[in-house]
Length: 329
Image (spheres, rainbow, N blue to C red):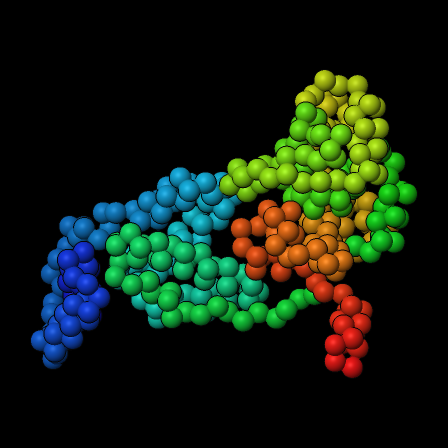
């Protein structure tokens, strides 16, 4: 009860005192309240701690900042699940509460450490935002460090994989999709948003709309240009979308349609884990492997942070061996 009262007093003074003054206030309160026993006679319904829906305010702020609805939905469900489980006012949540929550979540759901760290990261974003907006004194996630996860080497497509897929595409549309994904490294969500008018065949480039409605220019090779033109010329519909379904009414192809098509092709050809995102990782790895500056790869993939780009790219072990002999051996 004493700790709760001290936190409430400090929260009330947060906008009036600087950090040094807040520290002195904390020391005085601890000294004055030491040994005292308080009884909580306040009806919880009259408390103003539950008046503000901090989760909703945070979600509104993220929406204004341009976060995608998919990210917003993930933020909302993660935060609401934490609040429901802890069943405490936001201002009273401590570091120990969150550590216990993450530990119990991990044991209960038997999920990976990557998932737990994603939850930690979202909670850190939420409480850091509350701190920046002066809703709380200090984020309780500050002392919860990044969870160490084992590094998993993810597969990329080999040149042989790509040629086998190209040779076995029965539909010219699927061939165009494979080549466009492979040469641009765009996300599948960006692929399905493309319209025919977005493609500049003369310059072999197109503008895609990425996360947060951000646009960027990407480039494709001559082979992709030929296959795209062949596909467009074979079309009998008047849909403005670049890729449409194979049967009437020829609706715009959606993300799941591309994923299912790629997965089916992979199973048929006995190629492990064929999915659209693997083309993106393959492009990043190939570009860095051939000497493209990481900053240019970052721009090509549309990443805000270069760390994200580095997660996609894997250095060729053969190149490591050659470099070792050149610089060390």
